[in-house]
Amino acid sequence: MKAGSPGGTRLLVAAILVATMAVGIGLGLLGSPAAERDRRLDARRRSELRAVARAVDVYWNRVGALPLALRVLESSAEPKLQLSDPESGEPYSYQVLAEDSYELCTSFSTAEQLQDEGAFWSHPSGSHCFRIAVEDVPREPVFSSRRPSV
Image: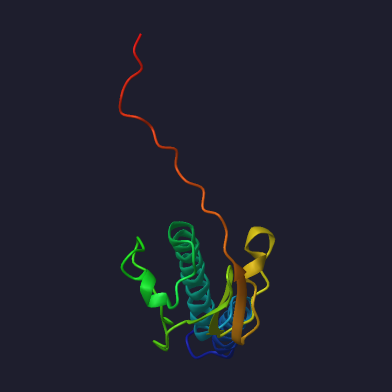
């Protein structure tokens, strides 16, 4: 076939249609880049809130009370805690509810229904608060540096 012939033009048009459909189907299955970005930001928010909750547990076990504000944890937590939203920069909301419970709040871009161990961290899109009761943090056993005498 010669370039410009009716058969060549039809083949080119068919190839363009197939490529366009493939891209459309791929975006439909995977979501747009913006939707993927939102999912990643929400995963980061959940991860940061889990780290904050762990730091609160450690603080409660060490001090015997909940911190009055999250900034109290900044100097004692390892690794360094992220206490604000990765997109907006707004601080995560923290409020003590009782002697051993509190809530952490933020705004999510997407709804996420997690399974199994992560189910607690499921959330709708928009503003959401997690009500959390502190947990005992397992302590590592302290071993003596002395060797037993034989």
